Image (cartoon, rainbow, N blue to C red; front, side, top):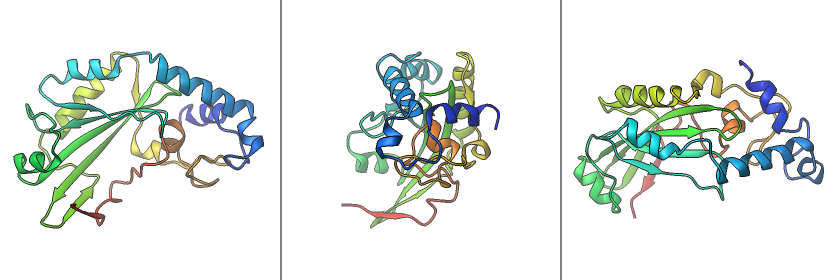
Length: 205
């Protein structure tokens, strides 16, 4: 796993339950909090700006929420020259009921990024999600993101690397034996399995 394991062990104490006094007082957790705070307040790049410059014909949303997770996240609409709209229903109507996006995750701990496809289909009563975009622009946009980030020394983590379980550590949402490279380097509230969303539906209010 390259140097991911050794880096993760610098930020996550081993064999301590998350949230306990011992966990919060550990040198690893204090280093994690300091590094995450620095990444939020003084990022090494204006990631939104460099993505916009690399993808001038694609709409990009800043999806960061530092109250919930420490990484930086950006959504890219895989429809050239179509802006995101405030009204989701209007966007679905504009795109014939199907929205394809690419989510870019940037780690606060290492100069690495992860690309996650998201396909959302609207039916009369449901949103249906999958992690496999169907847009013919998917690879073009992925390659543009890679080129942009590689120019600044960032490397892509593959699904095979990101899904590896890290022994002896846990996160807020993942117990020991469940936390993956992705959970530790980015955030632990997203499931990146390509097939995970295939059957998930959500009612349209």
